[in-house]
Length: 314
Image 1 (tube, rainbow, N blue to C red):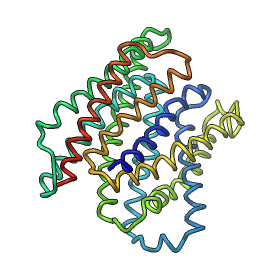
Image 2: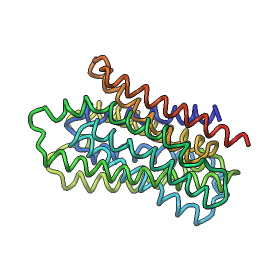
Image 3: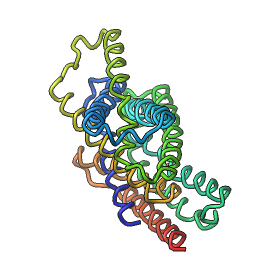
Image 4: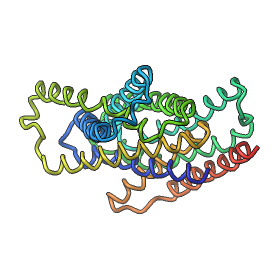
């Protein structure tokens, strides 16, 4: 279990960095950022598939079709809505929306395990850790939310559009880890890295075509790589390779080793890391409210880990 948790923490640490991309690239629309991340992610997978083609022959046609469905929803469309949420409503709103993901994934996965006759945790045992996680999320993001709303130029219409994007992104990110874990647990002989490449390889042609179409109809982008091409390319390479492909590979390794209900709760660390990175980028110390929120989040996860470790030991 410890190794699986470490994989999950590594994935969340890398995913948390993506929240800074709209802040570091304010001249670029969120759609360009989402597509470029997916493009690099897909390119890495294309290279690996070409180098290790024999290892991918174990995947059947229906596996490839399902991988395309997963990656379009979980890695492209979800990322676009997340970037729009950050761009129009700020990092804290996106973080608060994501606060529902661990709770939803834990409850849905636990109920599915109960119905399928698999080991599960009684709901009353999960109430306290899940409540700690949700309240912690709100406290972690409350200060930044108030600061964002107080800034000039942030209209209510823009804010609620960003909030809507955050909700849509959250629903997609709730669906993705559950269905992804289902496939990995049903195919224990398939290496999670192989499954990562299978998911991402389709992103390369789709993203390349989408980027050219969006750029072709966007008069505000006279150059293919925008106003700061070097900065943009370097950040997208880092985001695509480390924050996308590597993070997804680590998450798949985590999903293959841990119960889905527990895997979902580890997503809280994505927000913890994103808020920490935001404070580091602004050279600010965390507030008391933020610190208390972190304590609640970590306490909730710690209790959940103990509960699920007892179930696994049976």
